[in-house]
Length: 275
Ligand code: SF4
Ligand code: SF4
Image 1: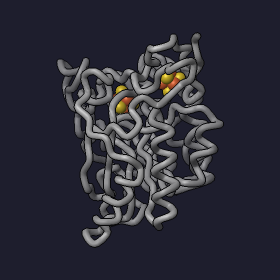
Image 2: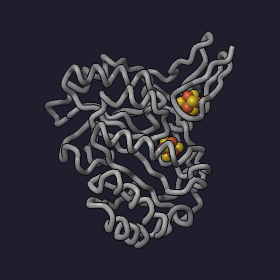
Image 3: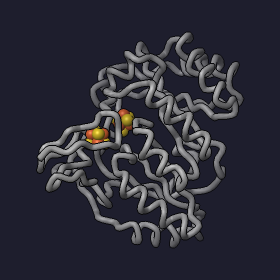
């Protein structure tokens, strides 16, 4: 029997025993399960600025974890070794929500404020993030999600009460660019709107030369963001050759600075950096 996953707008209709588009969710006996639940590929105590979050508890560190899989297909993915991996190819270690929260609490004396769900796309591990986030809050830890924002309204709304801060990618500002990445611009815009009403939100845009680097596009993107709140920080980051774009040139530093100047006319906080 096929089953439909309701987490993201792909709405995969998955055959029994198979995985969805993201490789992280599967049909087991007619039910959709989170097949990468607790299966971590990466864990590190990172500076909060690395998420990137510039205006949420600056100077803090956060226990950052990732699994495998992603519901988009960015040809420039900087984490393709895990985002494009599957159950069969990813090297994982199982860490239960209790185990993760215990680890996070042990790291508090080293400046840890909580847990960041990051590296691959965390929201496809929806049940794991929810279980960890609830438990983390019960233990007075913060929850941070670093996401592509490609999630349906219902699961997002149910998760938001447990989330303290998010960094959401706004990868470009055209429908055609998002189509290339197998996502859609409107869903991500809705995620940014909803999340910004519930928690601290910062937005990240990776600039790839010849793809999303036009001044007009940045003008539109930053003007739209300012309509939600001109105090939402925007991180404009530089592409380095990777994955399917490994033959391309890195983005010119001057392009990034000039786009930041444009965004700075609409927004109070614009940061530039390498991704
Ligand atoms: S979360 Fe994964 S399985 Fe679910 S609809 Fe999205 S891509 Fe498909
Ligand atoms: S959304 Fe992020 S993790 Fe997923 S493919 Fe794109 S860059 Fe990689």
